[in-house]
Image (cartoon, rainbow, N blue to C red; front, side):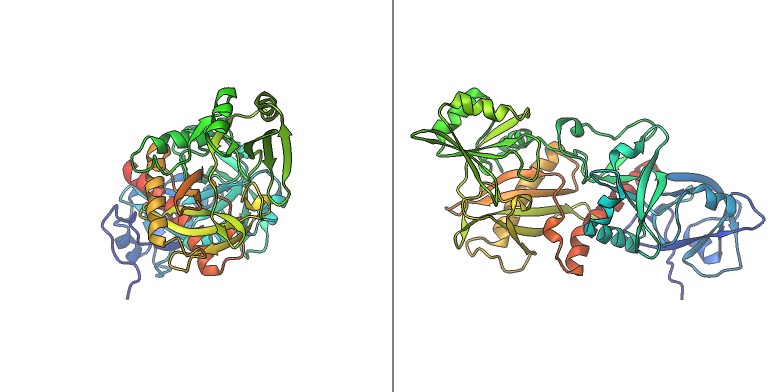
Length: 459
C-alpha cells in the first residue's frame, strides 16, 4: 500500500509532513527531476512538464522525466547538473514545504543567529545542537550564523551546520535562509530596523518581525489598551523631571535601558533621609548614596544609553526569596499563541534583579504541573499572558516567540515588567528530551508555517 496519498495540486502546504530523500542520477537527461509512477500521481505531474524546483531559497528550472529504476516513494532523483546546482549536503530527508503543477519546494531553510562568527561559540552551546537535531528530524536545512557574515547582495552567508553524524559543526557557504530566527544580535535601536528587503534578498521571513522592542514603546502599547493598561507599572522615559517625580510618587522605582538584556545597567532607586539610594546587582549587590537627584541623574547618564524609569513592584516570595516569572509564549504550526513554559526566577534576598545572568536560581514548570506558589493558578496566568501578547503582537508583530517577565506582587496581582523578543534558552538547559522538543521545536514548526503561507501567497 502506498505511503504517499495523492494530494490535489497546491495542497502540500498543509500539515501533512512528507519527507523526501534527494539523490543524484547521472542519466541521459539534463536539468531533470526523475519521478516514478506513484510520485507522478502524488505531485500531479506528467513527463515533459517544465517546473521550478526550490530547495531552501535556491531555485532551478527542471523538466519532469519518468523513471522506472526505483519504485520507492520517498526518494527523489535529480540529474547531476541540478543536484550540483544546490549547495547543500543532502544527508537527511527534506520536508515537502509546498507543491503545485508549477513548483515543488523542499527542505525549508531556517537560520538561527549567534553573537559572533567563531566556531568556538557554536561548540559551547548545547541548545544549538538540540535545535539542529530537531531541525534534521523535521526535514529542515538548519544553519547558525552571525548577521555580520551575510552577503546581502549575493544572497549568501558563511554559516555553521551540524555534520551528517551529528558530531561536529562544519563551516559552509549557503544561500540566506528563508526564515531567520534572530537570537544573537544585541538589542539596540538600530537592530529594530527590518531586514525584510536587503540587497537582493527580497522575501526574507523572521520568527519575530520586530527583532527588538523598546521597553517604553511596549509600555505605551499596553497602556493604550483597556485589556492591559492596568497590568503594567507606571513607566516613563528617564529625564531629570521624571526622575524626581517618580522618586516622590513611589516608595522605590527602577531604572532600565530602553534596549537591554541580562539585567545589565538596571538600578533600584529609593529616596532616603540622607539622599538617594541606588542599588545594582544580583548575587553581588552594590549600593551608592547620592545627596542630590541631579548627581544621581548624571551618574546614570554616564552609561550613554537611553533609560526608562519604572514604578517599583514589591515581589512575592518563596520562603524568604523574592521571585518573578519568565513566561515563554510561542506560536505553533497553526500560528496560534500558546504558553509553553514558566520559569520561577528566584533571587537572593536583597537582589535587585532576578536574571539568570545575575545569579538567580530558577525552577522550570510546564503547563498543568503544580505551581510552586499556591496563590497563583494556570488559568489566571494564561489569561494574563494572552491579553498581553495579543496587544504586543498587534503593535509589533507578527511575532512568533516572546518571553514575558511577569511579577506577582505581595497582594497577589500580576504585573508585566518586560517583553523579550529573544528569550534566553538558559532556563531549559536541563530539561528532558520531550520538553526540549516542545520548547525548541515549536518555533521551527512556526517557521515552516511562515514559509508555507508565503509560498501559498506567491503560487
